[in-house]
Length: 105
Image (cartoon, rainbow, N blue to C red; front, side, top):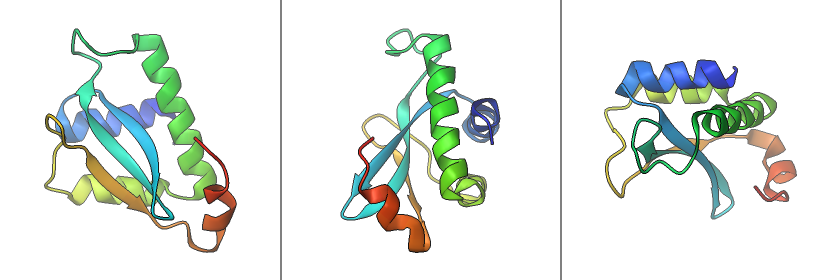
């Protein structure tokens, strides 16, 4: 998955270029689809920065083997990002979780 493919997934599901963040909480990693999006005047990134950020997120998902989990979750969820509430997608990294939980992002 590339950053552009990740962007396409977001736009096809929710119609907007939402921000995505990675969060580590209680020994688990979550992909969070945030409520801010590129088309907002107050969005904190330029278009170039946004797509570079998505490229980095996609690279992590590829390395973790989490692409199919994200695609499946987004395709089936009825949740949508809204002010103050992100869509949190838990990633199951299996045996490799400990490798990634030592790193900060």
